[in-house]
Image (cartoon, rainbow, N blue to C red; front, top):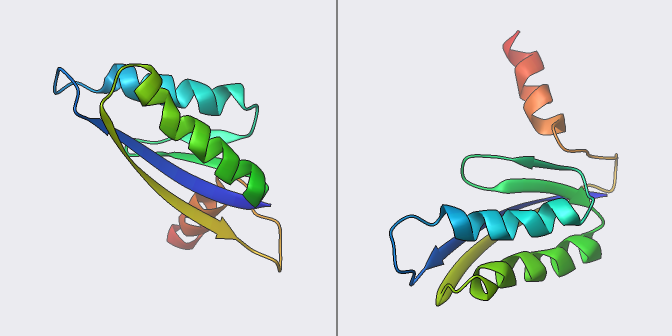
Length: 99
């Protein structure tokens, strides 16, 4: 199991507001059925690496399908072989240390 953080930034749009394009990309993540957490600057999704990378390609394409002329996508992939990881584990581990 792995975690992927993906951030999609449509540029080359008619307006400085990009929320509609980001929503189109996020819908693809939701429709995947994989566990996810939407954040202010990206979405974290849980799954197998190959599945996540294929999903990243579909998420990246969504703003183009919505009319964007250019899209910059940033992906972070974190995979551990020593234990399972799940969405929310990292934040919970830090929170425990703060208590």
